[in-house]
Length: 199
Image (cartoon, rainbow, N blue to C red; front, side, top):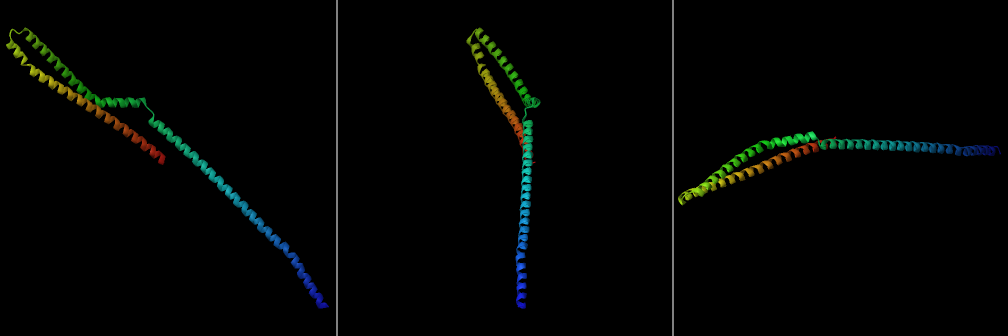
């Protein structure tokens, strides 16, 4: 009977330990759950902080880009702005390029006009001689000068054509110089704009 009582006590003791075990497991599970909740909360906070940092960086990049675009537009406006002083300088330069040639052509035209006037006077004199000649021999002599005057007229026409060709050539050359200057200015402007965009 004593042995049975001992067994019963031992059984009761083990039964008491079994009843006390579940609270220990429950406490461990709660600790794990709490740690998991804390980890999730920390991860959520980190994600929120990272998202806020990305948003701030995006806004800063947009503002910087907008400022760069504004600077480029202002630079382009300043670069292509028509300056009255620059136009005057360009006009003076163009006139300076063409003025010597124009003066030379003007002098040649004056000489040609004077030669034509002298020729007209000679023709008028010969015409008066013809009208007052007493016989046909003198008329024939006067008419013999006509081929010479005709040749003179042909030479003058050739000179006028040569002058006209030279004027056209000088105009083309001046236009090429002006176009090349504009191309150089545009190239400099494009280079500056490209450098600003790369910067």
